[in-house]
Length: 221
Image 1 (tube, rainbow, N blue to C red):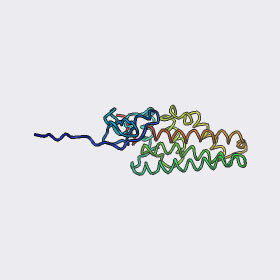
Image 2: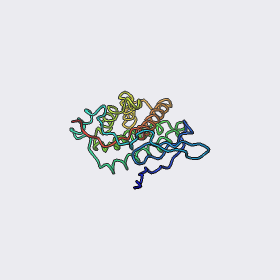
Image 3: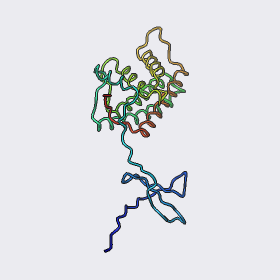
């Protein structure tokens, strides 16, 4: 009796940049495939390694105790996963636009460049929280809440969001937003520093969200 031999479907392959003789497919069926190429024809297909589709991380991140504290105090609140994803995408897009505008004003308006750089920086920080389905509640102290939540979790991976950088930027922004007679004016070097820090923050947030796959925050048990 003839037995019909079951065969796994052959995936559509794309050439590896590092090893042109190895082609990798779009991730399908939860496996990584390879295709050996000779004379521009697929000569063999097989399973090279197990490569399940990347899942959003759910392990406890550094800084979880700070997040739990902020949630408990009502300074952070949860949003839906769909809403968080949409907000994160919008925020990081808007952050990039603010950053471009800040750069364009460096030579003509240091004060506006500084303010726009801070907006970009803050939006990048907010986007990371939004990807975790979190946001700061409104009212006084919301900027500091974002600082504590983001620096405690991501300060090591994105140095621009370290506690010293975040605190300095926030305090300088407050001094320009609510000036008094003793507050110094924003200098060209201040604006350049702000734009550089915002650039690092936006780039870091984009890279982290694309490589790690942040998901909804789960309180540490």
